[in-house]
Image 1 (cartoon, rainbow, N blue to C red):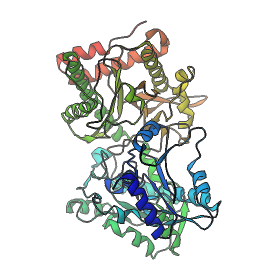
Image 2 (spheres, rainbow, N blue to C red):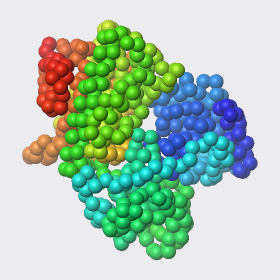
Image 3 (cartoon, rainbow, N blue to C red):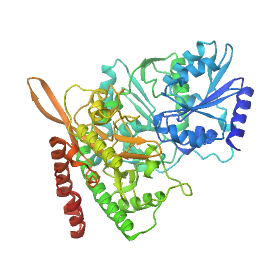
Image 4 (cartoon, one colour):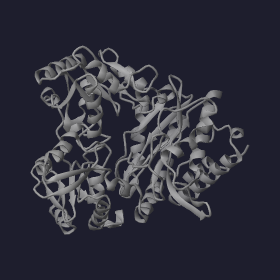
Length: 596
């Protein structure tokens, strides 16, 4: 079916199910960022490949809401489909809730697949619909339409991490969470998010693209823990290990019935932000269960890495730094030789160098390799047949990362691949200033991500330029590359703590002209205590040279210049012992002190 045919089929299916429209979103039952292909219903229906999008189909209209990262991509991918691309947050564009109020009348019903909708979303939509007298109801109308060719649920082999990797046993983690439950006035915890299940049980698999997690649920009480996982996915020895740590394994598809039939009185801590609508409703409908709304305490615990995890993460970034040095040398050699290169040639080059490193088993996300104006699309991904040739002018932006047995990495470098314009040099220098100002921030505890985000934007704001995204996101440990609770954006109310890791990735994105981003991972560290309180700051984890050729050194302050030179000296001293003599000579040149 074409996209217009799918939209027509959705309208008919909604009507047959007693509804007047349907809303699809980028989600699965676990509120995952990167979805198993089985749950990519929005992409199947619309042809849009971005994240954080919402497709509304009414009897007469269809509209897809996307954020600033995807305005350009959305316009291109939806052209000719009949679906209107709504630039969420742009002037004059109604918010999704207002659109629902305006397009559903009294007595009408909007259908959602409640398995794949966070309860908090459903509540907002219910309120918006109620303003016009309309209602919301859970019904899966996509599955019958997508029966042909729909990918199956993932079923990859599972494994357990060791205490040498994580720093704690599962039993120790359970004790921590049970103490958190008592403090929150609860006796039980429903755990839907895959990264939280993975942290609690040290469970890893390959169910999601580039994210080594398993599709599973967990349910924790004061005297038991149940892991819901499809049978046969864990080796018998691992099942025994979990049993010895107090974790029973049951079939994945039995969780909803488990909740409905639970016969012991419990006060269940559940987060409407992540627990799906169908499961939350089942908890509320069971008379034995009292639902206490609140954040999952696992999220806060896993956001602060312990000493063992941090030691492993630092090793991980050394390995990744070696891989990135060798990749850049390969890139420069190909450019010097006049070898034709396209954007799609970059990802295999990166993968080859990463896979040479011990313990690297996957990418942490699909690499972004964007030349020239394509880099203005923040989450652009080149596809064979629709990618650009890398011309010997301007910039090549490369955003990539790796999954290792000791951590997860995320890095962006913007490489000059030929002559640059004066504007390109200025933009690059301003982005570098933003990056450095964030990296060298000193702040008083407590300080939230929203407060810190503005540290990075000053150099661009002074030029009346902004980027339509946050400055950085948390990174998981052998887990999701985007993993909180910490982040650097104007909405984040999470207080930064020593041991948190976060990216620092400001950028300039001028549509159809240029895109520039410089990204390192940072570790939040304790600096000192004095009469004013506790002072915190950041230490770079990423160890990869930042291109110096585009930098207008006179634009940098003395502090910014000193930071850059000190960073490069650390990069060289840390990586050199693992490089050949020729590679060391190359790296010495790339990390030379920059002077005015």
